[in-house]
Structures are given as structure tokens and as C-alpha cells.
Image (cartoon, rainbow, N blue to C red; front, side):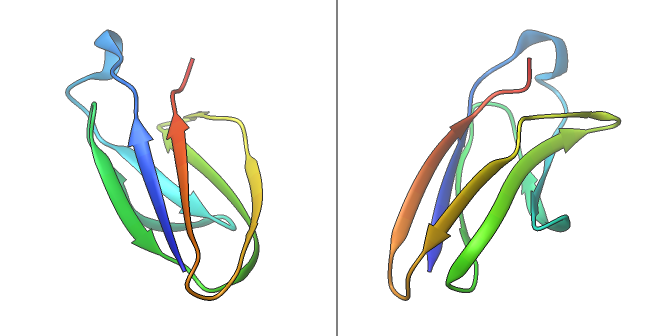
Amino acid sequence: MKICIKRDSGYADSLRNYEVLVDGKKIGTIADNERKDFHVKPGMHALYLKIDYIKSNHINFKGGDGEDLSFEIKIT
């Protein structure tokens, strides 16, 4: 399955990439105002982004084989 993540722009940390974590494991990074696709195994997952010690809320989701899901995330 594929998840598409859109990171909103944020002035304070616009020059730095956020880490993308699924089930507590880093699966990549995403830049300011970027949209990026990641492949994950079907099933239940928890998604969040972080930079240093600051992180977004956890988003729990369930996806099936061949399913595409989209998320828009901003750390506040």
C-alpha cells in the first residue's frame, strides 16, 4: 500500500526536513511544502512526523493491499 504525505509550510523550520515515522520507525524525510509517497505493508499503523524533540500528533490508520491513503501534516 502507498501513503502520500503533504507537509504544510512552516516559517520557523522551513529549511529543515521532518522525519517521517511509521510504527516508531523512520521511513524517510520530507521537506517544507513537499508532497511525498511512501510504501508500507497493509494493516494497522501509527504515523507521525518529528523534528528534534518536537513531533506531530499520531495518526492511526488501516490500509489494505493496493490501497492509497493521503495525509496532510503540520507540526504546531
